Image (cartoon, rainbow, N blue to C red):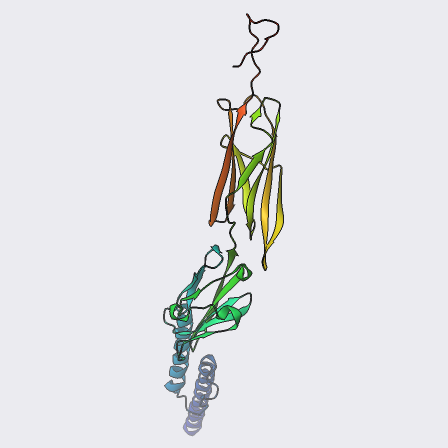
Length: 310
């Protein structure tokens, strides 16, 4: 091989190496662009130079997505409705809806009754409060705000499910809801009354009586105790008693049990009728029944007088 031929061979190898290096750089550049999801900004030039801008933009987008996820996690949360279990008819009721906005701002807070909106609070509007429907007419506006609504003169027809809905402002517009159930009760006017067949009983006798509670809506719950021990009612019935436009129910509970030797306590049966309507009405009526004992025969008595008073 001559020297000139050797030089040409070396030059050919040199350019072949350059071409191979260019292809390798080109391939690496494609891989990096694909991994960075920047197809449009990939510059497939012949020189192996990678622009840093596309990588920086991609990193910024990833950081922004991560920030938004963190922001949503730390936004509106912990909604909790607080309404009474039961209230007496005609009273004023305070309902509250607690929540934690954290980094969010309030967009709107709404109250619903049986699926129908009756109160809304939008802080960006003037005035911020709005009412809807028949129940909305019972809202006391100067006492209602972003966390509570106050209702006046509620009647039993407003017994049911209440819902609080809270929405955060942009960009999240997160919405949370919570529900509660409230009873509006017409309470009995008066105390329960008990009646029994007689006031003296002997062992083996059957005690029969009843307890009547004045009408209300809902009807009163009636229970019995005998000498402090709970006893089941023999029957319970609710009798319709319509007062004006309101239908109410009178409660009647029966008591029926046989006396055994251990029934009496110091010769007495202390029977109590307990009547209650939630925590709003708690009344009782009681009676003491006496033990009837057989008269003792007199040892010295005559045949005409075989018994004496105890």
